Length: 134
Image (cartoon, rainbow, N blue to C red; front, top):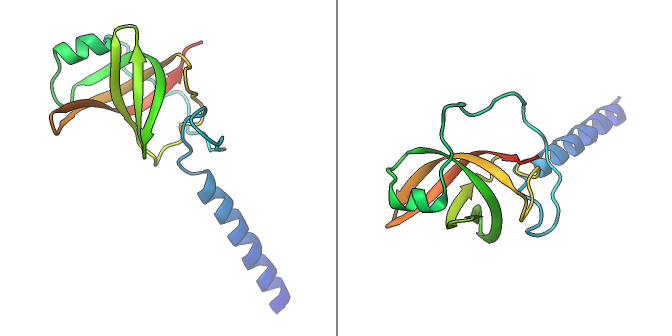
């Protein structure tokens, strides 16, 4: 009986460890490929949210402004900060490491949905969702 309890405990720990390792996978192309779990589908950003460019955002924005942007992730700054580039310029974006971003890759055309954050004299976008362009 004790052997069965030990075996059940070992299997439970192994499963919990693999689920923990997959949590918070970052985008591909910036280092070792991480596997990840997918979230629920079917939750799109509002259709009436206009697309903005980096240049437009840098010229006229306000804190906590909701934005939709199209471009690519081009550089990894560290932790959860990346450089986002479109045809008009670059801006820092934050991809929360509590989410799974493994469905996007470096240099891939994506659409991001997020909110502006003005901190320490810099504009950045906190990305809530990123979708590959097909």
